[in-house]
Structure formats: C-alpha cells, structure tokens
Image (cartoon, rainbow, N blue to C red):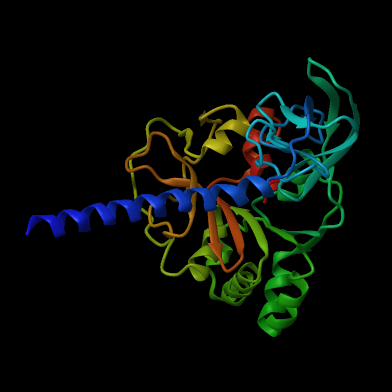
Length: 340
C-alpha cells in the first residue's frame, strides 16, 4: 500500500521541480533580452538658484533626452532633487547635453553642458529659475493680505489683478461666466479680506472657486480664506477651539520632509505670529497638513493643502506678507507658490 503513495509523491516533486525550472527560465530570458543597452555615463553637477539669485532647495534637475528612462539602472540617475544649497548631481552620456531645472511648473530654467569622459564630476554651473510666462496667474486682491507683493518679492514678473468685490458681484450675477474667467488661469491667489468672506454674499464665489479647483485649478490663500474652504469642503474647517498656546505668539513645526528639505529647517517663528488667529483641528481627511503650531495643545494645522477633483487649494493660517523681508521665512511661501 505504501509503494503507490511513494511513487505519487516522487512524481509530484519531479513535476514541481520542472515547473520551477522552466518558470524561472521563461521569466528571466525576455527580461534580459529586452533591457536597453547600458551607456557609459559621467557625473554632472548643477547649482540651482531661485529668481532672486539665492540657492534653491527642492528643485528637480533633469537630463533632457536621456538614453533610456531614468531608473533603468539604479546607478545612472538622470534626474535628482537639489539640496538646501541648490546642488544636485545627475548622470549623463558624453556630448553636448541640455539640462532642465524646475520647481513645480511655475518656475524653470535650462542650460547646456559639454560632457566629456571624466573621472571627476563635470560642472554645469549655475542655472537661475524664472517664471514660466506661458502659465497665466491671477491675484484676487483684498484688504487684509498682499499676495501680490509677495509674488513680486519672490520673483514673479507677470500676473493679472482683480478685486474680490468685483469678482463676488460678478459671481452673484453669473457664476458660469466667472468660472469661465477663472479657467483662463493656471493659478489663482486669493487675498484674505478681513473676515468679510463670512457673509452669505460670498457663498456663490466660494462655490465657484470650488468648481474651478475641482476642474484642475490651483489656488493659494491665507487666514480668512478658510470661509471659502468651509463651503467647498463642508462640514470641515468649522471647529474653532481655544487651545493653549505658549507665549504671546507661537512657532510652526514643519511636518513634511520635502518642505523641511527645501527650507532647511523644521521650526520657524516670527514676531506677532498667529496670536489672535483661529485654530482648527477638523481638517478634511483627504487634505495634507504640512505644518502645525508647535506649542499649541492640541496642535493646530497652519499649512494645509486641500484637494478636490484634479486641483488643490493651499491654505495658510497666517497672512503671507508677514514673512516679507526674511529670506528664511519666505522659503515657506516659495515652496508652495513655486511647486503648485
């Protein structure tokens, strides 16, 4: 009785072994034969500057027309991210090569370099980012924030202006036409209007903003812009609470590693910051919190990227012009305004 069972077991093991052998051979063969031929590459260094001439961390440096997709060989990266000193190293084959540097889609630059067979890294020198003028930018001006000044101070050269009262009244008359107007712009920056956004007369404008973002638009605004967020992401941004804050003003704690790498710090503060501002902890689950109040209990979100559809709305619980004049603090704004 045992012999047939033994033969069955032996036959099963033999078949399984053959399947494993041929399975492995079939899997490895085509993968090796279809891999692109490896090209000898050499290290190229690039130093990226922002529009003001300062080192730009967090920028993406890429080789234009690489011999094969980046990542094909792990030791041959054709793109890299700059460190806080603005430096990045990529690989390139020999010859005249074009390199791009960008942060988001708003700011970019290109340079060319003659790559030779060298045992030491070849320097492509400095590249300075400038605004991509093919993407239209709108600033909605209001009374309690000056994003138009901030944009100028960090290197924007072209943007259109309108006033929030004008846009509100147009939305109440014909929201469809306002949506068509907004769609001309890749980015809309919304000044804070001293809490008048709470009025019901702004509800249609808020909902129009929501449709603009849902369709792929990108918005940025501070402080009382949360009234727009309340209407777009209802029922969130409604639980204002009186948490405890150490001292007369608080500092922010950066949670996001990419933001920390681009700015070079994880904690920032400035005089008078957030002393009398609202504090929320009912943030939409789909949103990303980039920074919180460091000493509040519980910690309150102060830099949040909110998503709906294919667009996003970046909100800060401070007036962005408050950090003008301080290059370290301006990096907080630069990261989002340049990488939207």
